[in-house]
Image 1 (cartoon, rainbow, N blue to C red):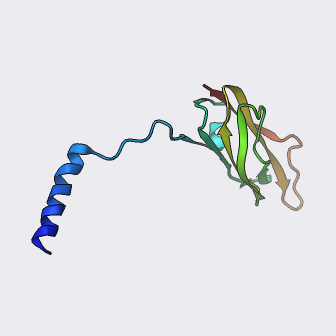
Image 2: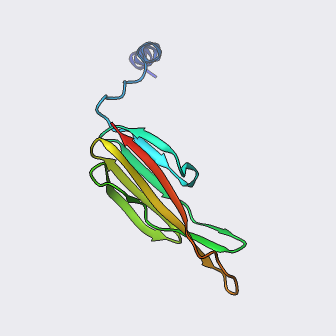
Length: 133
């Protein structure tokens, strides 16, 4: 290693702890990640933030559980930006907070019975409230 390279590395090693990493830009959106455990929560977000909903399918003694595609109650507050079709019962969507207000993201988990088994008739709802400022 050349003397010049060692000097540069020493300068970086000294400067980084003093200066720190570059600060995040104030206008960068925040990514809010939501899953099955977030049911019934209320979240505060800012216009421009992204909200990712990932609801993972499961299996229990009654059968497999499949999620419907997440949707927004108010597209003036939360607009679906992207999503994948439900695959194997798992649903994923990304929403953008497009304006101030209050909107809900919702989905429902339904049972897909195993052969010879019965499932509960009613789907299990999932909902998160987003308060956009």
